[in-house]
Image (cartoon, rainbow over all chains, first blue to last red):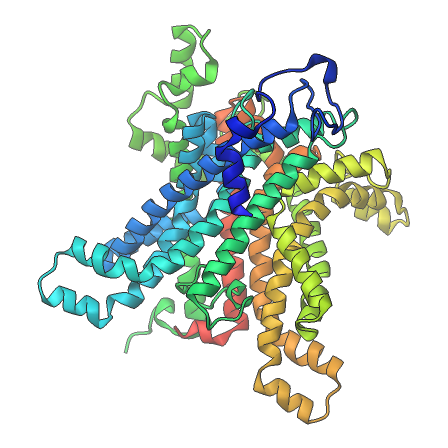
Length: 277
Length: 337
Protein backbone atom coordinates (compact mmCIF):
# COMPACT_ATOMS: atom_id res chain seq x y z
CA UNK A 1 0.00 0.00 0.00
CA UNK A 2 2.75 2.38 0.99
CA UNK A 3 4.76 1.39 -2.07
CA UNK A 4 1.89 2.38 -4.38
CA UNK A 5 1.80 5.84 -2.84
CA UNK A 6 5.55 6.32 -2.98
CA UNK A 7 5.87 5.13 -6.59
CA UNK A 8 2.85 7.21 -7.65
CA UNK A 9 4.22 10.36 -6.04
CA UNK A 10 7.80 9.97 -7.21
CA UNK A 11 6.77 9.21 -10.77
CA UNK A 12 4.00 11.85 -10.79
CA UNK A 13 5.60 13.98 -13.55
CA UNK A 14 5.89 10.91 -15.79
CA UNK A 15 2.59 9.10 -15.21
CA UNK A 16 0.20 12.01 -14.61
CA UNK A 17 -1.98 12.58 -17.67
CA UNK A 18 -1.89 16.40 -17.40
CA UNK A 19 -0.05 19.22 -15.69
CA UNK A 20 -1.41 19.83 -12.16
CA UNK A 21 -2.05 23.46 -13.05
CA UNK A 22 -3.55 23.02 -16.50
CA UNK A 23 -7.11 24.34 -16.48
CA UNK A 24 -9.79 23.00 -18.76
CA UNK A 25 -12.33 25.83 -18.57
CA UNK A 26 -15.01 23.96 -20.51
CA UNK A 27 -14.77 20.96 -18.22
CA UNK A 28 -15.14 22.34 -14.70
CA UNK A 29 -16.34 20.01 -11.97
CA UNK A 30 -16.70 17.19 -14.48
CA UNK A 31 -17.54 13.72 -13.22
CA UNK A 32 -15.10 10.87 -13.90
CA UNK A 33 -14.75 10.16 -17.61
CA UNK A 34 -12.22 8.45 -19.88
CA UNK A 35 -10.61 11.85 -20.50
CA UNK A 36 -10.37 12.73 -16.81
CA UNK A 37 -10.36 9.41 -14.97
CA UNK A 38 -11.33 10.93 -11.61
CA UNK A 39 -13.02 14.05 -12.98
CA UNK A 40 -11.97 17.69 -12.71
CA UNK A 41 -12.09 20.34 -9.99
CA UNK A 42 -13.61 23.82 -9.90
CA UNK A 43 -10.88 25.16 -12.19
CA UNK A 44 -11.16 22.24 -14.57
CA UNK A 45 -7.90 20.75 -13.34
CA UNK A 46 -7.47 16.99 -13.55
CA UNK A 47 -8.07 15.41 -10.13
CA UNK A 48 -5.99 12.28 -10.73
CA UNK A 49 -3.01 14.46 -11.62
CA UNK A 50 -3.48 16.63 -8.57
CA UNK A 51 -3.77 13.59 -6.29
CA UNK A 52 -0.47 12.24 -7.65
CA UNK A 53 1.23 15.61 -7.14
CA UNK A 54 -0.47 16.12 -3.76
CA UNK A 55 1.06 12.84 -2.65
CA UNK A 56 4.51 14.37 -3.07
CA UNK A 57 3.68 17.14 -0.58
CA UNK A 58 2.17 14.64 1.86
CA UNK A 59 5.12 12.28 1.72
CA UNK A 60 7.77 14.99 1.92
CA UNK A 61 6.04 16.58 4.91
CA UNK A 62 5.32 13.18 6.49
CA UNK A 63 8.85 11.83 6.25
CA UNK A 64 10.70 15.07 6.99
CA UNK A 65 8.66 16.04 10.02
CA UNK A 66 8.96 12.52 11.47
CA UNK A 67 12.70 12.61 10.84
CA UNK A 68 12.95 15.96 12.59
CA UNK A 69 10.77 14.85 15.49
CA UNK A 70 12.64 11.54 15.73
CA UNK A 71 16.08 13.16 15.80
CA UNK A 72 15.10 15.76 18.43
CA UNK A 73 13.17 13.25 20.54
CA UNK A 74 15.79 10.50 20.34
CA UNK A 75 18.64 12.85 21.22
CA UNK A 76 16.83 14.27 24.23
CA UNK A 77 15.53 10.86 25.32
CA UNK A 78 19.02 9.35 25.16
CA UNK A 79 20.53 12.25 27.10
CA UNK A 80 17.79 12.01 29.75
CA UNK A 81 18.13 8.28 30.24
CA UNK A 82 21.93 8.21 30.11
CA UNK A 83 22.72 11.09 32.44
CA UNK A 84 19.65 10.94 34.69
CA UNK A 85 19.43 13.42 37.56
CA UNK A 86 18.98 17.09 36.73
CA UNK A 87 19.35 16.57 32.98
CA UNK A 88 16.61 13.95 33.08
CA UNK A 89 14.27 16.08 35.20
CA UNK A 90 14.77 19.13 33.03
CA UNK A 91 14.20 17.31 29.75
CA UNK A 92 11.18 15.43 31.01
CA UNK A 93 9.55 18.60 32.36
CA UNK A 94 9.89 20.23 28.95
CA UNK A 95 8.49 17.07 27.38
CA UNK A 96 5.49 17.18 29.73
CA UNK A 97 4.80 20.75 28.73
CA UNK A 98 4.94 20.01 25.02
CA UNK A 99 2.72 16.97 25.54
CA UNK A 100 0.08 19.19 27.17
CA UNK A 101 -0.66 20.75 23.80
CA UNK A 102 -2.79 18.81 21.34
CA UNK A 103 -0.32 18.33 18.45
CA UNK A 104 -2.61 19.90 15.88
CA UNK A 105 -3.08 22.97 18.06
CA UNK A 106 0.65 23.46 18.54
CA UNK A 107 1.22 22.99 14.81
CA UNK A 108 -1.57 25.46 14.01
CA UNK A 109 -0.13 28.06 16.36
CA UNK A 110 3.39 27.59 14.98
CA UNK A 111 2.22 27.78 11.38
CA UNK A 112 0.28 30.91 12.29
CA UNK A 113 3.45 32.68 13.37
CA UNK A 114 5.95 31.04 11.01
CA UNK A 115 3.89 31.08 7.84
CA UNK A 116 2.39 28.33 5.70
CA UNK A 117 5.38 27.20 3.57
CA UNK A 118 6.34 23.53 3.30
CA UNK A 119 9.48 24.06 5.39
CA UNK A 120 7.56 25.82 8.14
CA UNK A 121 4.91 23.10 8.22
CA UNK A 122 7.64 20.47 8.57
CA UNK A 123 9.22 22.52 11.36
CA UNK A 124 5.86 23.00 13.09
CA UNK A 125 4.94 19.31 12.95
CA UNK A 126 8.44 18.24 13.97
CA UNK A 127 8.25 20.52 17.01
CA UNK A 128 4.77 19.19 17.77
CA UNK A 129 5.63 15.49 17.57
CA UNK A 130 9.09 15.13 19.16
CA UNK A 131 7.94 14.79 22.77
CA UNK A 132 6.45 11.30 22.38
CA UNK A 133 9.77 10.08 20.93
CA UNK A 134 11.66 11.58 23.87
CA UNK A 135 9.40 9.68 26.28
CA UNK A 136 9.71 6.42 24.41
CA UNK A 137 13.49 6.65 24.01
CA UNK A 138 14.01 7.63 27.63
CA UNK A 139 11.98 4.65 28.86
CA UNK A 140 13.82 2.26 26.53
CA UNK A 141 17.16 3.87 27.36
CA UNK A 142 16.62 3.42 31.09
CA UNK A 143 16.18 -0.30 30.48
CA UNK A 144 19.33 -0.84 28.42
CA UNK A 145 21.49 1.51 30.45
CA UNK A 146 21.97 -1.07 33.17
CA UNK A 147 22.66 -3.92 30.74
CA UNK A 148 26.05 -5.56 30.99
CA UNK A 149 27.24 -4.55 27.54
CA UNK A 150 26.72 -0.89 28.43
CA UNK A 151 28.58 -1.36 31.70
CA UNK A 152 31.34 -3.13 29.82
CA UNK A 153 31.56 -0.36 27.25
CA UNK A 154 31.93 2.13 30.07
CA UNK A 155 34.52 0.01 31.85
CA UNK A 156 36.81 -0.14 28.84
CA UNK A 157 36.79 3.65 28.72
CA UNK A 158 34.37 4.63 25.96
CA UNK A 159 33.18 8.24 25.96
CA UNK A 160 29.62 9.24 26.80
CA UNK A 161 28.71 10.00 23.20
CA UNK A 162 30.13 6.72 21.93
CA UNK A 163 28.28 4.69 24.55
CA UNK A 164 24.99 6.38 23.70
CA UNK A 165 25.33 6.11 19.94
CA UNK A 166 27.20 2.83 19.52
CA UNK A 167 25.86 0.77 22.39
CA UNK A 168 22.52 2.11 23.53
CA UNK A 169 20.91 3.45 20.35
CA UNK A 170 21.14 0.27 18.24
CA UNK A 171 19.42 -1.68 20.98
CA UNK A 172 16.41 0.61 21.21
CA UNK A 173 16.04 1.34 17.52
CA UNK A 174 13.16 -1.12 17.05
CA UNK A 175 10.44 0.71 18.99
CA UNK A 176 11.65 4.04 17.56
CA UNK A 177 11.20 2.70 14.03
CA UNK A 178 7.70 1.44 14.83
CA UNK A 179 6.70 4.78 16.29
CA UNK A 180 8.20 6.61 13.33
CA UNK A 181 6.30 4.48 10.83
CA UNK A 182 3.00 5.12 12.60
CA UNK A 183 4.09 8.74 12.96
CA UNK A 184 4.34 9.26 9.20
CA UNK A 185 0.62 8.52 8.95
CA UNK A 186 -0.18 10.94 11.79
CA UNK A 187 1.99 13.63 10.23
CA UNK A 188 0.28 13.21 6.85
CA UNK A 189 -3.12 13.61 8.50
CA UNK A 190 -1.87 16.66 10.40
CA UNK A 191 -0.54 18.26 7.20
CA UNK A 192 -3.81 17.53 5.43
CA UNK A 193 -5.74 19.05 8.35
CA UNK A 194 -3.69 22.24 8.15
CA UNK A 195 -4.19 22.44 4.39
CA UNK A 196 -7.89 21.73 4.84
CA UNK A 197 -8.15 24.75 7.12
CA UNK A 198 -6.29 26.85 4.55
CA UNK A 199 -3.24 27.07 6.79
CA UNK A 200 -1.10 24.50 5.04
CA UNK A 201 0.53 24.38 1.66
CA UNK A 202 -0.87 27.32 -0.30
CA UNK A 203 -2.70 27.08 -3.63
CA UNK A 204 -2.19 26.48 -6.47
CA UNK A 205 0.13 23.72 -5.16
CA UNK A 206 -1.83 20.47 -4.99
CA UNK A 207 -2.45 19.13 -1.47
CA UNK A 208 -4.93 16.46 -0.42
CA UNK A 209 -6.31 18.45 2.49
CA UNK A 210 -6.94 21.54 0.39
CA UNK A 211 -8.61 19.40 -2.29
CA UNK A 212 -11.08 18.08 0.30
CA UNK A 213 -11.76 21.66 1.41
CA UNK A 214 -12.55 22.56 -2.22
CA UNK A 215 -14.87 19.57 -2.31
CA UNK A 216 -16.74 20.92 0.71
CA UNK A 217 -17.03 24.34 -0.92
CA UNK A 218 -18.39 23.03 -4.24
CA UNK A 219 -20.24 19.97 -3.03
CA UNK A 220 -23.53 21.06 -4.62
CA UNK A 221 -21.98 21.24 -8.07
CA UNK A 222 -19.48 18.41 -7.79
CA UNK A 223 -20.44 16.04 -4.97
CA UNK A 224 -17.52 13.68 -5.44
CA UNK A 225 -14.77 16.28 -5.57
CA UNK A 226 -13.57 15.36 -2.09
CA UNK A 227 -14.04 11.60 -2.41
CA UNK A 228 -10.83 10.68 -4.19
CA UNK A 229 -8.39 12.84 -2.20
CA UNK A 230 -10.05 11.46 0.94
CA UNK A 231 -9.51 7.91 -0.26
CA UNK A 232 -5.89 8.80 -1.05
CA UNK A 233 -5.28 10.00 2.51
CA UNK A 234 -7.03 7.03 4.05
CA UNK A 235 -5.16 4.58 1.83
CA UNK A 236 -1.81 6.14 2.73
CA UNK A 237 -2.45 6.38 6.45
CA UNK A 238 -3.86 2.85 6.57
CA UNK A 239 -0.74 1.70 4.73
CA UNK A 240 1.61 3.28 7.24
CA UNK A 241 -0.47 2.03 10.19
CA UNK A 242 -0.45 -1.55 8.91
CA UNK A 243 3.26 -1.29 8.14
CA UNK A 244 3.88 -0.06 11.68
CA UNK A 245 1.75 -2.87 13.14
CA UNK A 246 3.58 -5.42 11.02
CA UNK A 247 6.96 -4.03 11.98
CA UNK A 248 5.99 -4.15 15.62
CA UNK A 249 4.84 -7.79 15.32
CA UNK A 250 8.08 -8.65 13.54
CA UNK A 251 10.21 -7.02 16.23
CA UNK A 252 8.05 -8.33 19.04
CA UNK A 253 6.72 -11.70 17.95
CA UNK A 254 5.67 -12.73 21.43
CA UNK A 255 3.07 -10.02 21.76
CA UNK A 256 -0.42 -10.61 20.56
CA UNK A 257 -1.43 -8.53 17.56
CA UNK A 258 -3.79 -6.18 19.34
CA UNK A 259 -2.05 -6.25 22.69
CA UNK A 260 0.12 -3.33 21.75
CA UNK A 261 -2.69 -0.81 21.75
CA UNK A 262 -3.22 -0.96 25.50
CA UNK A 263 -1.45 1.84 27.33
CA UNK A 264 0.82 0.27 29.90
CA UNK A 265 0.52 1.32 33.47
CA UNK A 266 3.80 3.15 33.47
CA UNK A 267 5.85 4.42 30.59
CA UNK A 268 7.08 1.43 28.73
CA UNK A 269 9.34 1.21 25.70
CA UNK A 270 6.42 0.14 23.60
CA UNK A 271 5.56 2.21 20.57
CA UNK A 272 1.84 2.01 21.22
CA UNK A 273 0.85 5.21 19.63
CA UNK A 274 -2.58 6.17 18.57
CA UNK A 275 -2.74 8.51 15.61
CA UNK A 276 -3.69 11.97 16.75
CA UNK A 277 -6.26 13.57 14.54
CA UNK B 1 8.91 12.71 65.30
CA UNK B 2 7.72 15.57 63.09
CA UNK B 3 4.59 15.03 61.12
CA UNK B 4 5.45 14.07 57.53
CA UNK B 5 4.49 16.38 54.68
CA UNK B 6 1.61 15.13 52.56
CA UNK B 7 3.95 14.28 49.65
CA UNK B 8 6.03 12.10 51.93
CA UNK B 9 3.04 9.96 52.69
CA UNK B 10 2.47 6.99 50.44
CA UNK B 11 -0.97 6.01 49.32
CA UNK B 12 -3.61 7.94 47.53
CA UNK B 13 -3.29 11.26 49.35
CA UNK B 14 0.45 11.42 48.74
CA UNK B 15 0.01 10.52 45.12
CA UNK B 16 -2.67 13.16 44.63
CA UNK B 17 -0.54 15.90 46.17
CA UNK B 18 2.43 14.86 44.04
CA UNK B 19 0.44 14.66 40.84
CA UNK B 20 -1.41 17.94 41.39
CA UNK B 21 1.78 19.79 42.26
CA UNK B 22 3.16 18.66 38.89
CA UNK B 23 0.43 20.72 37.26
CA UNK B 24 2.01 23.99 38.39
CA UNK B 25 5.24 23.76 36.33
CA UNK B 26 3.25 22.44 33.39
CA UNK B 27 0.84 25.38 33.49
CA UNK B 28 3.79 27.77 33.85
CA UNK B 29 5.47 26.12 30.89
CA UNK B 30 2.30 26.33 28.82
CA UNK B 31 2.04 30.05 29.47
CA UNK B 32 5.72 30.50 28.61
CA UNK B 33 5.26 28.68 25.29
CA UNK B 34 2.14 30.70 24.48
CA UNK B 35 3.90 33.90 25.49
CA UNK B 36 6.91 33.10 23.29
CA UNK B 37 4.67 32.38 20.28
CA UNK B 38 4.36 36.03 19.46
CA UNK B 39 8.15 36.40 19.59
CA UNK B 40 8.60 33.66 17.01
CA UNK B 41 7.06 35.88 14.36
CA UNK B 42 9.89 36.71 11.99
CA UNK B 43 10.70 40.42 12.10
CA UNK B 44 8.65 42.87 14.12
CA UNK B 45 5.42 41.32 15.48
CA UNK B 46 3.59 44.64 15.39
CA UNK B 47 4.49 45.03 11.74
CA UNK B 48 3.30 41.48 11.02
CA UNK B 49 -0.02 42.11 12.78
CA UNK B 50 -0.70 45.46 11.14
CA UNK B 51 0.43 44.48 7.65
CA UNK B 52 2.82 46.20 5.25
CA UNK B 53 0.77 49.39 4.93
CA UNK B 54 1.23 50.34 8.61
CA UNK B 55 2.95 53.63 9.41
CA UNK B 56 5.89 53.68 11.87
CA UNK B 57 3.67 55.60 14.31
CA UNK B 58 1.01 52.86 14.25
CA UNK B 59 3.68 50.21 14.79
CA UNK B 60 5.15 52.16 17.71
CA UNK B 61 1.67 52.47 19.24
CA UNK B 62 0.99 48.72 18.97
CA UNK B 63 4.48 48.00 20.36
CA UNK B 64 3.54 50.15 23.31
CA UNK B 65 0.10 48.54 23.68
CA UNK B 66 1.49 44.98 23.55
CA UNK B 67 4.45 45.95 25.74
CA UNK B 68 6.87 44.76 23.05
CA UNK B 69 9.40 47.48 23.85
CA UNK B 70 10.22 46.16 27.34
CA UNK B 71 12.84 43.51 28.20
CA UNK B 72 11.50 40.05 27.50
CA UNK B 73 11.51 38.68 31.06
CA UNK B 74 9.55 41.73 32.21
CA UNK B 75 7.08 41.15 29.39
CA UNK B 76 6.59 37.57 30.55
CA UNK B 77 6.09 38.64 34.16
CA UNK B 78 3.50 41.19 32.98
CA UNK B 79 1.81 38.58 30.83
CA UNK B 80 1.66 36.04 33.64
CA UNK B 81 0.27 38.65 36.02
CA UNK B 82 -2.47 39.58 33.59
CA UNK B 83 -3.38 35.96 32.85
CA UNK B 84 -3.64 35.21 36.56
CA UNK B 85 -6.12 38.07 36.82
CA UNK B 86 -8.17 36.57 34.00
CA UNK B 87 -7.08 39.24 31.56
CA UNK B 88 -6.15 37.65 28.24
CA UNK B 89 -5.81 40.93 26.35
CA UNK B 90 -7.92 42.54 23.65
CA UNK B 91 -8.82 40.89 20.39
CA UNK B 92 -7.64 42.91 17.39
CA UNK B 93 -10.22 41.65 14.92
CA UNK B 94 -13.30 41.40 17.16
CA UNK B 95 -12.88 44.58 19.25
CA UNK B 96 -13.71 42.63 22.43
CA UNK B 97 -11.73 41.22 25.29
CA UNK B 98 -10.24 37.82 24.52
CA UNK B 99 -11.56 36.51 27.82
CA UNK B 100 -15.18 37.27 26.91
CA UNK B 101 -14.83 35.63 23.47
CA UNK B 102 -13.28 32.54 25.04
CA UNK B 103 -15.89 32.45 27.80
CA UNK B 104 -18.63 32.40 25.16
CA UNK B 105 -16.99 29.74 22.97
CA UNK B 106 -15.57 27.32 25.53
CA UNK B 107 -18.88 25.88 26.84
CA UNK B 108 -19.93 25.12 23.26
CA UNK B 109 -16.75 23.12 22.70
CA UNK B 110 -17.16 21.26 25.99
CA UNK B 111 -20.75 20.45 25.02
CA UNK B 112 -19.56 19.06 21.67
CA UNK B 113 -16.79 17.02 23.30
CA UNK B 114 -19.14 15.57 25.92
CA UNK B 115 -21.74 14.49 23.35
CA UNK B 116 -18.96 13.03 21.18
CA UNK B 117 -17.58 11.16 24.18
CA UNK B 118 -20.99 9.69 25.03
CA UNK B 119 -21.46 8.56 21.41
CA UNK B 120 -17.95 7.08 21.33
CA UNK B 121 -18.53 5.07 24.52
CA UNK B 122 -21.99 3.92 23.47
CA UNK B 123 -20.58 2.62 20.18
CA UNK B 124 -17.18 1.39 21.32
CA UNK B 125 -17.86 -0.50 24.55
CA UNK B 126 -20.44 -2.98 23.17
CA UNK B 127 -18.36 -3.38 20.01
CA UNK B 128 -15.15 -4.03 21.92
CA UNK B 129 -16.79 -6.40 24.38
CA UNK B 130 -18.50 -8.38 21.62
CA UNK B 131 -15.23 -8.58 19.67
CA UNK B 132 -13.43 -9.91 22.72
CA UNK B 133 -16.12 -12.46 23.54
CA UNK B 134 -16.34 -13.72 19.96
CA UNK B 135 -12.64 -13.45 19.38
CA UNK B 136 -11.41 -14.33 15.84
CA UNK B 137 -14.97 -14.69 14.60
CA UNK B 138 -16.13 -12.95 11.41
CA UNK B 139 -17.81 -10.37 13.65
CA UNK B 140 -14.50 -9.65 15.38
CA UNK B 141 -12.67 -9.23 12.08
CA UNK B 142 -15.37 -6.95 10.69
CA UNK B 143 -15.42 -4.83 13.83
CA UNK B 144 -11.65 -4.50 13.95
CA UNK B 145 -11.48 -3.71 10.22
CA UNK B 146 -14.00 -0.96 10.91
CA UNK B 147 -11.81 0.28 13.75
CA UNK B 148 -8.67 0.26 11.60
CA UNK B 149 -10.49 2.22 8.88
CA UNK B 150 -11.85 4.66 11.44
CA UNK B 151 -8.39 5.28 12.83
CA UNK B 152 -6.95 5.88 9.36
CA UNK B 153 -9.76 8.16 8.23
CA UNK B 154 -8.97 11.85 8.65
CA UNK B 155 -11.66 13.34 10.84
CA UNK B 156 -12.21 16.31 8.54
CA UNK B 157 -12.93 14.04 5.58
CA UNK B 158 -15.55 12.16 7.57
CA UNK B 159 -17.06 15.52 8.50
CA UNK B 160 -17.05 16.63 4.86
CA UNK B 161 -18.77 13.41 3.80
CA UNK B 162 -21.39 13.87 6.51
CA UNK B 163 -22.12 17.42 5.38
CA UNK B 164 -22.41 16.34 1.76
CA UNK B 165 -24.53 13.32 2.53
CA UNK B 166 -26.90 14.90 5.01
CA UNK B 167 -27.25 18.22 3.24
CA UNK B 168 -27.77 16.71 -0.20
CA UNK B 169 -29.58 13.44 0.28
CA UNK B 170 -31.03 13.29 3.76
CA UNK B 171 -32.32 16.33 5.52
CA UNK B 172 -32.22 14.62 8.87
CA UNK B 173 -29.85 16.87 10.79
CA UNK B 174 -28.77 20.47 10.26
CA UNK B 175 -25.23 20.64 8.90
CA UNK B 176 -24.13 23.88 10.45
CA UNK B 177 -24.60 26.09 13.50
CA UNK B 178 -25.56 25.37 17.06
CA UNK B 179 -28.89 24.95 18.84
CA UNK B 180 -30.08 26.94 21.85
CA UNK B 181 -27.82 27.18 24.92
CA UNK B 182 -27.73 24.08 27.13
CA UNK B 183 -29.25 25.92 30.11
CA UNK B 184 -32.21 27.15 28.10
CA UNK B 185 -32.83 23.73 26.62
CA UNK B 186 -32.92 22.12 30.06
CA UNK B 187 -35.18 24.86 31.42
CA UNK B 188 -37.60 24.34 28.55
CA UNK B 189 -37.45 20.60 29.04
CA UNK B 190 -38.35 21.06 32.71
CA UNK B 191 -41.47 22.92 31.58
CA UNK B 192 -42.37 20.09 29.25
CA UNK B 193 -41.20 21.81 26.08
CA UNK B 194 -39.09 19.35 24.10
CA UNK B 195 -38.40 21.67 21.14
CA UNK B 196 -35.23 23.46 22.28
CA UNK B 197 -33.65 20.22 23.52
CA UNK B 198 -34.44 18.53 20.22
CA UNK B 199 -32.88 21.40 18.31
CA UNK B 200 -29.81 21.27 20.56
CA UNK B 201 -29.30 17.54 20.07
CA UNK B 202 -29.94 17.60 16.33
CA UNK B 203 -27.47 20.44 15.80
CA UNK B 204 -24.84 18.66 17.85
CA UNK B 205 -25.48 15.30 16.20
CA UNK B 206 -23.30 15.51 13.08
CA UNK B 207 -20.21 17.21 14.53
CA UNK B 208 -20.37 14.99 17.60
CA UNK B 209 -20.86 11.87 15.50
CA UNK B 210 -17.85 12.81 13.37
CA UNK B 211 -15.65 13.15 16.43
CA UNK B 212 -17.31 10.27 18.24
CA UNK B 213 -16.87 7.74 15.42
CA UNK B 214 -13.11 8.28 15.15
CA UNK B 215 -12.93 8.09 18.94
CA UNK B 216 -15.03 4.92 18.91
CA UNK B 217 -12.59 3.29 16.51
CA UNK B 218 -9.70 3.81 18.92
CA UNK B 219 -11.64 3.01 22.09
CA UNK B 220 -13.16 -0.20 20.71
CA UNK B 221 -9.69 -1.60 20.04
CA UNK B 222 -8.61 -0.81 23.58
CA UNK B 223 -11.78 -2.26 25.08
CA UNK B 224 -11.31 -5.45 23.10
CA UNK B 225 -7.71 -5.86 24.27
CA UNK B 226 -8.58 -5.13 27.88
CA UNK B 227 -11.51 -7.54 27.80
CA UNK B 228 -9.47 -10.34 26.26
CA UNK B 229 -6.93 -9.89 29.03
CA UNK B 230 -9.62 -9.76 31.73
CA UNK B 231 -11.42 -12.84 30.36
CA UNK B 232 -8.20 -14.81 30.68
CA UNK B 233 -7.76 -14.01 34.39
CA UNK B 234 -8.22 -16.48 37.23
CA UNK B 235 -11.15 -14.68 38.81
CA UNK B 236 -13.13 -15.05 35.60
CA UNK B 237 -12.37 -18.77 35.54
CA UNK B 238 -13.42 -18.98 39.18
CA UNK B 239 -16.68 -17.17 38.46
CA UNK B 240 -17.38 -19.52 35.57
CA UNK B 241 -16.54 -22.52 37.73
CA UNK B 242 -18.97 -21.31 40.35
CA UNK B 243 -21.65 -21.47 37.69
CA UNK B 244 -22.15 -17.81 36.86
CA UNK B 245 -23.91 -17.33 33.54
CA UNK B 246 -21.67 -16.19 30.73
CA UNK B 247 -23.48 -12.85 30.46
CA UNK B 248 -22.87 -12.25 34.14
CA UNK B 249 -19.22 -13.18 33.81
CA UNK B 250 -18.71 -10.82 30.91
CA UNK B 251 -20.58 -7.80 32.24
CA UNK B 252 -20.07 -8.13 35.99
CA UNK B 253 -16.64 -9.62 36.36
CA UNK B 254 -14.56 -9.00 33.27
CA UNK B 255 -15.88 -5.62 32.14
CA UNK B 256 -15.60 -4.19 35.60
CA UNK B 257 -11.90 -4.90 35.62
CA UNK B 258 -11.43 -3.84 32.04
CA UNK B 259 -13.02 -0.51 32.97
CA UNK B 260 -9.64 0.66 34.24
CA UNK B 261 -8.26 0.80 30.73
CA UNK B 262 -11.50 2.14 29.37
CA UNK B 263 -11.57 5.08 31.77
CA UNK B 264 -8.02 6.03 30.88
CA UNK B 265 -8.57 5.80 27.17
CA UNK B 266 -11.86 7.65 27.32
CA UNK B 267 -10.28 10.41 29.37
CA UNK B 268 -7.45 10.76 26.87
CA UNK B 269 -10.00 10.79 24.05
CA UNK B 270 -11.67 13.76 25.64
CA UNK B 271 -8.37 15.57 25.38
CA UNK B 272 -7.99 14.56 21.73
CA UNK B 273 -11.52 15.74 21.05
CA UNK B 274 -10.41 19.21 22.13
CA UNK B 275 -7.78 19.07 19.39
CA UNK B 276 -10.17 17.51 16.88
CA UNK B 277 -12.73 20.17 17.68
CA UNK B 278 -10.40 22.75 16.13
CA UNK B 279 -11.05 21.19 12.73
CA UNK B 280 -14.59 19.88 13.16
CA UNK B 281 -15.97 23.18 14.42
CA UNK B 282 -14.79 24.91 11.27
CA UNK B 283 -16.63 22.41 9.06
CA UNK B 284 -19.93 22.59 10.93
CA UNK B 285 -19.70 26.30 11.80
CA UNK B 286 -19.90 25.35 15.47
CA UNK B 287 -19.18 28.50 17.52
CA UNK B 288 -16.63 26.87 19.82
CA UNK B 289 -13.08 27.66 20.78
CA UNK B 290 -11.61 25.63 17.92
CA UNK B 291 -13.35 27.73 15.29
CA UNK B 292 -12.41 30.84 17.26
CA UNK B 293 -8.76 29.79 17.10
CA UNK B 294 -8.80 29.12 13.37
CA UNK B 295 -10.58 32.40 12.62
CA UNK B 296 -8.10 34.24 14.85
CA UNK B 297 -5.18 32.71 12.94
CA UNK B 298 -6.73 33.60 9.58
CA UNK B 299 -7.28 37.18 10.80
CA UNK B 300 -3.72 37.34 12.24
CA UNK B 301 -5.31 38.27 15.56
CA UNK B 302 -2.39 37.14 17.74
CA UNK B 303 -3.74 38.10 21.18
CA UNK B 304 -6.82 35.99 20.43
CA UNK B 305 -4.66 33.11 19.12
CA UNK B 306 -2.59 33.24 22.32
CA UNK B 307 -5.68 33.29 24.53
CA UNK B 308 -7.33 30.36 22.75
CA UNK B 309 -4.18 28.23 22.69
CA UNK B 310 -3.53 28.95 26.35
CA UNK B 311 -7.05 27.97 27.41
CA UNK B 312 -7.17 24.79 25.29
CA UNK B 313 -3.74 23.63 26.50
CA UNK B 314 -4.59 24.36 30.13
CA UNK B 315 -7.84 22.43 29.77
CA UNK B 316 -5.96 19.56 28.12
CA UNK B 317 -3.45 19.48 31.00
CA UNK B 318 -6.31 19.52 33.48
CA UNK B 319 -8.12 16.64 31.76
CA UNK B 320 -4.87 14.65 31.79
CA UNK B 321 -4.64 15.29 35.51
CA UNK B 322 -8.18 14.00 36.02
CA UNK B 323 -7.35 10.89 34.00
CA UNK B 324 -4.25 10.19 36.11
CA UNK B 325 -6.16 10.76 39.34
CA UNK B 326 -9.07 8.53 38.37
CA UNK B 327 -6.58 5.90 37.30
CA UNK B 328 -4.89 6.04 40.68
CA UNK B 329 -8.23 5.84 42.46
CA UNK B 330 -9.21 2.79 40.43
CA UNK B 331 -5.84 1.06 40.49
CA UNK B 332 -4.11 0.84 43.88
CA UNK B 333 -0.88 -0.46 42.31
CA UNK B 334 -0.01 2.96 40.86
CA UNK B 335 -0.11 4.80 44.15
CA UNK B 336 2.62 2.90 45.86
CA UNK B 337 5.25 3.39 43.21
